[in-house]
Length: 204
Image (tube, rainbow, N blue to C red; front, side, top):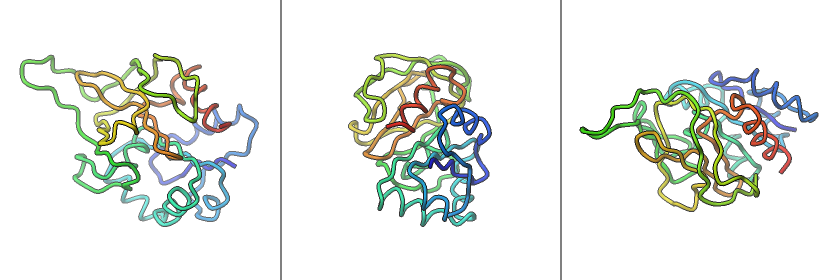
């Protein structure tokens, strides 16, 4: 069973619609009992980092998520804000994250003299592969996906970086550390290639 974690911050309906195409059991839930039964987890997210962490605490999800992800090592996919919450700290609200990956969430900033690109970064952008992923071993060298974000992830360990993109600076667009997998882009909004990301994750 795939559980899309409902903590009041995600585009659940769109993700569940995509998952329904795979003819598998998939639900959105904030119940620790459902999360305990899950074979795979998806942590979506749209909004503010600090609010996301606050909601995970308010919904009583921190303990069960740590238990399943760090203890049981079940696969989890973080999407947009969801993957940012995997990091140790965010400049958005200056708060600590889940700390599952040695990384930080930083606001886009462009040095003086460079083109000042619009923030948030909205639209299609290329993801360039840095290394293979266990969740999609045949991932092409380059693919385009749909992004909506003002903050990006910076990984301390380059081995955690699967794909990168560029928006005035290079940023991590896919990360993976063991069972922990995340995309800064929205696969549920990225048409056929986004569908392929979800398909490889749930079927891996």
